[in-house]
Length: 283
DNA sequence: ATGGGGGCCTGCCGGC
DNA sequence: TGCCGGCAGGCCCCCA
Image (cartoon, rainbow, N blue to C red):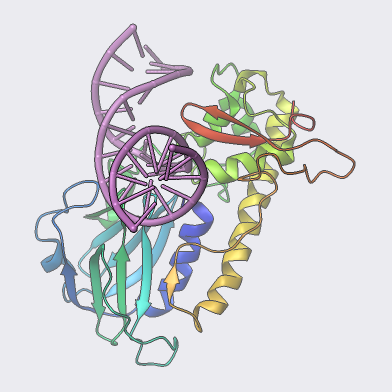
């Protein structure tokens, strides 16, 4: 569920609590998430100052004073909870520990950052900051949608002659970073492209048009996350999900939102995942 | 090289 | 009320 906008929202929420702060203690409550934690993870986190929080695709990277970076992926159900902030930046106090609180970072400023992930599709690892891009999980990820390497000519070229559905192509992190099922559905709706169409049958004009649409869809979702961050100070401190209204995702059998269209949103399953689209507007 | 599918994992929800 | 099947899906990995 956490796609690029949700991960970016988490990063922005954590930054004021963590950046420039020392991890006084790392509480690691289990040996693994999706994969085993790196050796001595707690010890390698303890005493390190978080120099910077970054995002690459759906990963958060915390660059540490040691020269290592903590890599975090929220998986499907990963959440970050901020509590116990002594500076009064966030009003919520320590909540009771919850089931699936797998890792808790106790910051020297008194804040706690809790990683909670019921389904444990998430991941954490430590890597050398300078060679982060070569880490196995990052090495083959494609261009950032807001970066200079993601542009019309690139997307036209990379979709050309491909035989897989455009839905699958946009979900492929090697083609573009950060999109998941929700935002691919929303993107294709705006582009008026049927999710089942072969990528190679998307015209150059349509492929070029996908670039600004992808950016708009993600940017609007990040903006919605930003409004959540304002509420966050008065709420429960949970980062990772926020209310956002979608045009097609999750709206099977509801009316298409396109002005003048009287069709209903359809749902099909593509490689095990739901695609929502308007059969009238998207061809 | 490419495309497709399995499997991981738990919470939730509808049906009986 | 309780059980149970189905569903949610990011992403590695394996297979053809």
